[in-house]
Length: 420
Figure 1 (cartoon, helix red, strand yellow):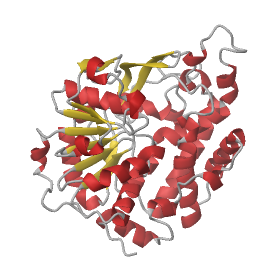
Figure 2 (cartoon, rainbow, N blue to C red):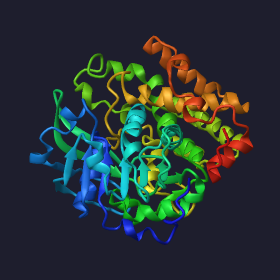
Figure 3 (cartoon, one colour):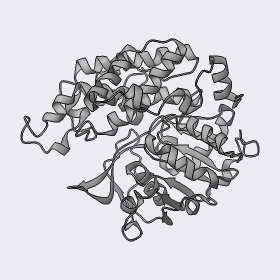
């Protein structure tokens, strides 16, 4: 499973090779535009039927990238990017590419991977933003589809940016506004025997230049660590569920506001919700400890800010391990990204059936109670009139790690040993 001939120290071959970006949403378009502006050959792919809208007219308009791009070291790259290839044909996108960036929602990972796998080539390196257990899913599908190509597969705890597509009354413009750039991200490969080569390959991925030129990437000890390092479930889910009345009343009872200006960070967070977020994360830490994998550590105080623990991703910590910037809960702030505007948003429809559900299933398999996380799944289900415990396709069998004793799981994560 590991890539023997492309070990660490030899990844310079990626320097001038094309980069394929899979995904035509905000993150995919931002990654693609950012890397094209850095001078690389970039091919942007999305799947049909979505590509009819997401890729429409891009050959004529390109993508305009701008925004405040907040980060500690003031890294910035702006301009209009015109791509070398814009396509719904995945073979055209990935043939001869050195780096493949997967920037798609978790629910789209399986169809993307099933389309991608037959076209993989030896020596390619796949970077997934955000991982959301996609590395596990991709390796499972590669086994089942009989793919033996020597590729490196790794994922990251978050996207490189907080970014949004500009839209007006449902019309989406070819314009991405970057609110912030990460200066550090946590990444890992599957298996971890590829980690040195994976991390070195990131030097040739311009969409994380703010990271490599900032605080640098942080190495998780397994891709399961990266699942625990994903701050989306711990921030998004409690804040959306417990702040739902503010969200649904924004522009209604709270008059004078455009409903699209609601920000979970700026308007939804409160001390009590932040306390729930902290306890949610404590359950994640207990899971990681029991399984024997890592997870990042956050100060209690860091949760009680209008940007929560996300601030560290783009503004870093001081010499005492404290946040360089705090956005007090008792003061207004316009720093946060907008959204969600309703419960049919990825903050619930992805972060609950994927992130929260896998935490729950890991807790069941390894004997760790997760009452706070479980309560979020129950409440989100009630709002959606369904049980995410029953309807989510995300379970440990889906990832190929069901009924694995801890020793077997760790052997797979670290060495790629899969005896089934």
